Length: 604
Image 1 (cartoon, rainbow, N blue to C red):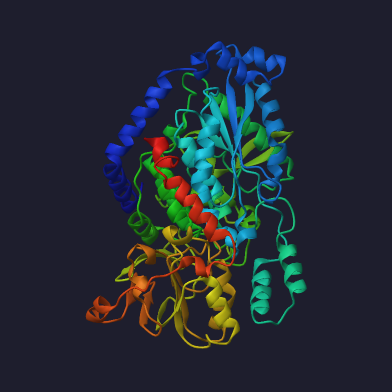
Image 2: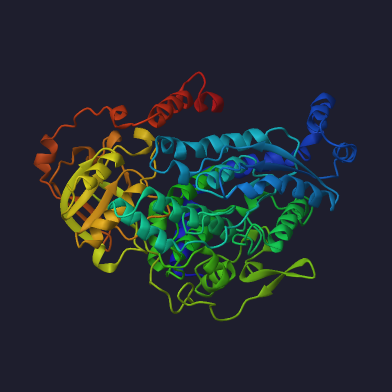
């Protein structure tokens, strides 16, 4: 029986989205009614479309009962998570041929690594890259050559961008194909310890690089439970990936067979009749709620509070932070994966992984079972784990008990009774805070503000010994309008050091902290942002600020008369930029908003 709160939130989303969703569905139905798109192309169009194909593929593409699958890839070999995708197009094409279909690479999308750009000027382009990826995905699928699509992407902004772009072509059957995490390296706790020691000057650059290289050591997704792995978990919970496929290592024989099977499955989904399963039938209000619940039950990335909202809107579905907050209140925390625990994503997979998680959420009535997925109707297959038997993938039931109850727990014995992601509100605005990794005694902090307008300024203050006190760091002008909302993950080591020294510290910012946010309480995504009239812009050094994650409060404890009298000094944001990042961001924003060349002109 579905939980009453899950039903109520879902129904509210349905009602809120009714007009927008209906318009989207009508648009998809109109496109679907056109039939095989290649059939609308002129001879010249079609000749261009298969000019580079071999003879057999050309012959097949001239017959409209053959299926052509468009591959949109985020491959590059600078991202460890995406390096395995280099060989995927060949594997996919061969697998599609084995079932009488064709596959073509429809296009590539940019894929920056937030791990490389973290704390660097290039990070200002990170969030904006999501929209670029969505647009590039749409460009790739715009050629009217395809009957289905495969999305190759894993990390941060890449998966949301791919999904947003694919939703514009939601009448096409579409699957995401993961590549899996790298094997476990240096434990994340040890890596974090070295980072804090480095922040204190206790270890050298050489020692730090050695630790980082032992943690991030091979092809595959980073093993901590950040945004990349949160993306994979949410996609699978929504039915957009094959069951149990998210966290199989890149070099595993099972990984290869799952990739082949995903390629052939999207061909089957493209067949007219009972098998036809367009993307818009998988992504609906119930599957979006399932994705949110799975994220909350595992203490996933706060970045998804933005990305799920954006991807859902691309499907005509309106979700807001209040929905997250109400679902979090009734969703128990069933997993502890770093930074919410000591295990990594491989340990989660070995303890039962997605099959165990979905089964337990089902038992608690916290997910909708009446959904369409890549594996058919309902979630039965998603409670089973894939294995190789005589070279073929079979799904098997998992043991009743968790393989490690320090990593995964049953619905009736959770780590926490809530999802550990709260909405905080007050005169400073609204913000999201991830509490699943924050100790109980640190969840309420009332202290004087230390105000910074860049993460570099806070780091310098720490290095100069100016932060040895109780304080709440207000790091402002980090929102999407100011500088693209970069991740501020490099603030964690110094703040963690200060917390370990016994000081009460917290962070309040209109920027982001990523899926790696940990033991320091951080109210992030503050809205309205400082540059958009937010009260953050009026905070002064020494003002008393209260952050109460337990009761959902974020308050600037200053008299309203005093606040009304304060003026906001002009800020030259470029003065805080140590490189090209903000300049590139500003130029990109100007280009995209231009009435002559920007996105609005294209949409009009």
